[in-house]
Image 1 (cartoon, one colour):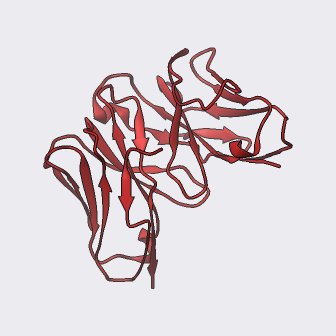
Image 2 (cartoon, helix red, strand yellow; image 1 turned 90 degrees about the vertical axis):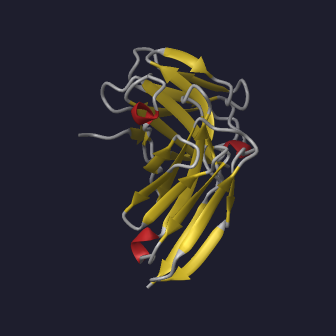
Length: 111
Length: 118
């Protein structure tokens, strides 16, 4: 059972398109992280957000933490084939040492 | 520097066999985590160590699962009498500090051990 629901589960788009991935929960998290995972590898951290309403940008990626700290979104502008991978959100409880992962969004960017 | 390493990378076991999965965290990292990732799912928390102390094992699915980190560095996840439902990728992660501040809690993941139980 996963506390975080991600949508969509699968996304296949053309290079240059924009996309948004959502991460929702009924629970409040102290912090939320986004990871990207490629086949045969472990997840790699992209960003951590801790304040309700916080927006962080990482090149073409924009991350937002909901005001109530229950949801988050990841927006990618002008997607590139190198963005292909499994995107995971993970929420941390108060002690920051136990993380709950979403089920992931599998993104495929076609050249 | 070296990242988190796990061995073996692949393990095939017959149902009922015992297996041991090893994790070498980044040197000096205080915290170590084990996760189970089923096919097409996100990782699920199994257990957490701070140095050699196992502070949370609430995610271990049954008493067939046992983890240890006796000297506060290398950790082993042992699964006794493996069942088909144990088939998954087992991920290990380590983080630098125990402080309750997100910036110190970046988890660095290993590549995982893919366990297949026949």
